Structures are given as structure tokens and as C-alpha cells.
Image (cartoon, rainbow, N blue to C red; front, side):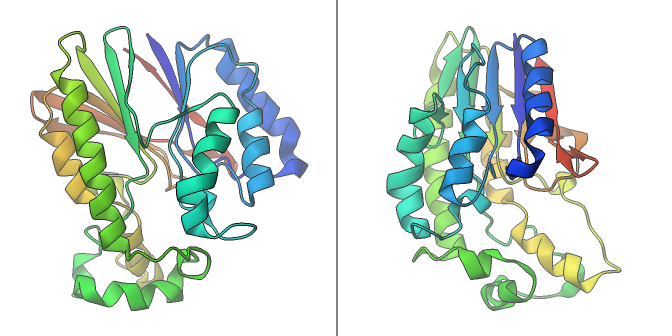
Length: 265
């Protein structure tokens, strides 16, 4: 089984030729499944055009949203999350992974945005989690463009509960031999870079991942692979899991352009 994961397209019409080359590269691998792990485009018209790039790809196509997909514009962030993005995703031929898991053969795929909960904050700063809602506006545009009514940690808890239910149900299926988890934001500390020499990057680290969700994934014995986006910096890590190592990857960029990760399971 060949699964291709891409992320962080940030669709720009001026670069359409390069996006089509990425799609051709993916299609040439004859994937059994494509997963797009968030940050397709903003505003909504570019989100649609980003997903439409893959319209001719003849395999199941799955999607989890990224923070940039939820930036207010024609709609506010809550409307995008609850009413606009799910049907728009389905109209483009994708499965919205935030409300269902998918099984392809003996492989289960479970995904979520994995909103940050400040658990990845840089320890050397010595700041409590309660400081980060106010600090966000200094370093992160989410503070300017995400206008839903929920706090970061409340959203993180809500998504984790829903994701954990889907993951538990998927793992309980006897026909599922292994599970791939796809998230927009990374869920293990090792995946997130540390820059102690930079105060800005050290502050930004708090808004890069969700370690509580990672612990839920680590506890599931059938999870063998995790792929995330968000960081634009690729890498591969081996994380101890419930029944052996979990191979973890971040989808990186090449020459400031999105790439992809190909898994053969």
C-alpha cells in the first residue's frame, strides 16, 4: 500500500505551474491514497483551487485542516470550521478526517488538526502556560486571523477527545493491522525544533504542537506511522510506541515550495 501525504500548499495562483508539477509527481507514484494535511489556501477561493489541483487523482483523497485554512475572511473562523470547510472539502472529492476514520485494506487512517495546547512551549523561558494567550499576538498571526470563540487549550481538548474516540474505534476493528495518524500540527516533542538563541522562535514553539494528543497516539498499539505538517521543515524520527517504534515524519518544503512524504505500508 502506497500512501502519499502532502501539506502546507498555501496555494498561490502565480505558482500554479509548480503546483501542477507536484501533482504530477504524486500521480506518477500511483498512490493508493492521498492525504492533504492542512494549510491548503486562504481565502476560501484559494482553498477550493488548492484542493481542485488533485481532481484527476484516481484514489481515495483525505483531508485535515490547518490553521491558515481557518483564517477569517469571507467567513469567520467558527463558520469555516463548522459549516463551510467540511462540505467544501467533500465537494472537492476529499474525506473530512475530522469526523471519520478511514480503512483501506488492513491500514487504518485517523487524522486531526491537532490544535496547540502550549505543551510544546520552550522550557528555558520559564513561562507558565497561562502566559501564552497574551503572548501569541507578538509572534503568531493566528492571534490576528483566528476569531472563533474558543481558547486554544479548549479547542485542543475538544479535538483530542473526538480524535481519541475515532482512534480507539479504529484500533478495535480486527481487520485493521496498522494505523497511520495524520495531523496538521506535530504531536511529539522531538519533531519540533528548538532555538534557545532566539526569543521569537522560542515563543513560537508554544504554538507548534500538541503533546497530550501524542501521548494518546503513543498508547495505541496499532499506530505505526505519524505524519504531520505545519512546520515547513521536514524530518524523520523514531518514537517509542505502545507496541514498538512509531515512524514519525514532518512534510517539508524544498526551495520554499511544498513537498510530500511517501509511505509504503
